[in-house]
Figure 1 (cartoon, rainbow, N blue to C red):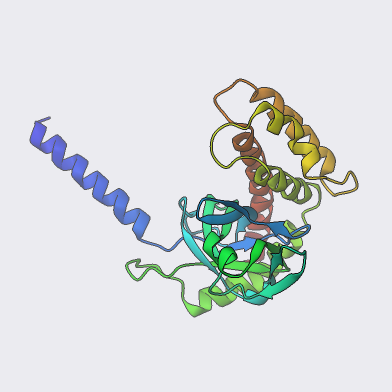
Figure 2 (figure 1 turned 120 degrees about the vertical axis):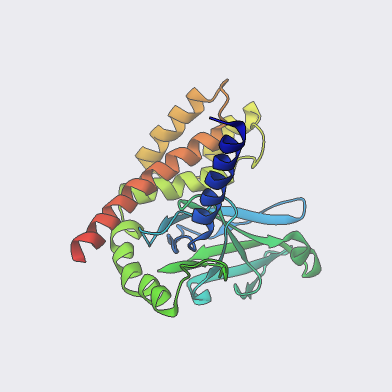
Length: 262
């Protein structure tokens, strides 16, 4: 094949890949209700944490890393600022919290600027996810398949209701995913944890043996702790992968139920 023809084909292929990725807005996501408030950990100019999410729309593409979202109903989130004396103040989610995909459809990072805490005399901000919290991708006018008001209403309404029964209340796997997310948030976001951090992370998040999915999360943690001791993957990465595997299986159960009801 002539070099110019090979180069032309490569350009066409790259253009088609770009068109496919930009052709549709990504999936609307659900956030699973928190076991308890999650404190956003501050580093440099941002305070944030990962929260367990899942896909509500099967036929759209998963979000890429960093895809921006917004909360459909701010009342489904409780946001509190904590002062130095322990007093709390209720904050508004809309306009304060930033939402971005952390690992495809299975984890979302919620964050606030560290300057907000400094300007308001807060030592921390914590977020509690309530029932049927739903995230909508930021509008993309360049996409040919955008989310209409009807699409959003269906996803945040009847589909979210089905997902609540199958995923939010998914029993052991849901519980294990939520517990593992707490372990993930307790580990350094970048780089490898020190030996001391690795050894104490389980006890530092005070997981209750009575929690749903405790045994599953404990077994997963022990496996990840063992296999990542001297490997290329960090403990945080291994736990994140484990978390996503449980959510993925629940997502398949939800898709099967939705397809059966179509």
